Amino acid sequence: MRSAENDGGSPAARAGRSAEPAGTSKTSEASRQPTSDPTSSESPGSGESPSAAPSPSPSTSETGGEDDEKEKKKDEPALPAGWRMHKDPNGFSIGLPKGWHEDKRVGKQVWFRSPDRVSFVFVEYVDKAGPDPKKDWENQESYSRGRFPGYKRIRIENTDYMEKAADWEFTWNTSSGKARVINRGFVTKGGRGYAIYWHTLDSKWDENLHYFKGFTESFSSKK
Image 1 (cartoon, rainbow, N blue to C red):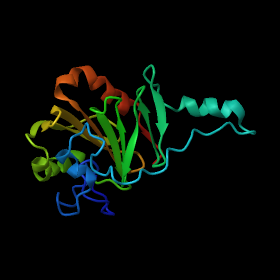
Image 2: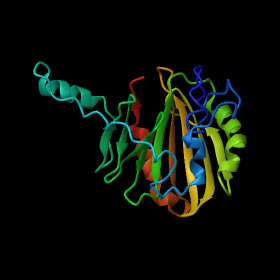
Image 3: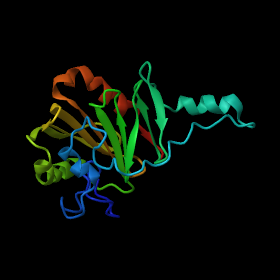
């Protein structure tokens, strides 16, 4: 999402940042990710030390007690069976399936991987989003196409999510086989821009699509 503050040029975080043409700013690790094997732990940014672990859930205070904890949980979306809520220091929460873990942090991206390391999701944000996620994905496509070997667009279209949102769905070729991606760029009520980038093997798409649904339905932001 193209921020008025120019938070970088990552395709994952620029949905709605149409104020600046694609490719005019320095690309982040997200835009370079397709050059490596997504199943490898040595994907871009892996050489950097991860940030501190996510803050623990708030403990019960002496004054609020368990009633305060119950009230907070009422505001959290319901999770699929076996999932847990990850509360991130970057100001968002997202549900994670059993066995999934935080893999790394690269700038304003937080990566989470499946136990087999083939499927992954990362969340990226900018503090101030632009006005049109769909238009920005269309701009991003021409810039990013060469970074995804065998790239084929499936769709770029608006979707009903948060304040405004658009999905960019495509396939590309990795060393592990043909992959399929949904990159959802959206704007929250507070004006923050996010992208949820979901990657899995094309052959497992129907089997694994419920994960993307769980990620998006459980996501919330404080900003």
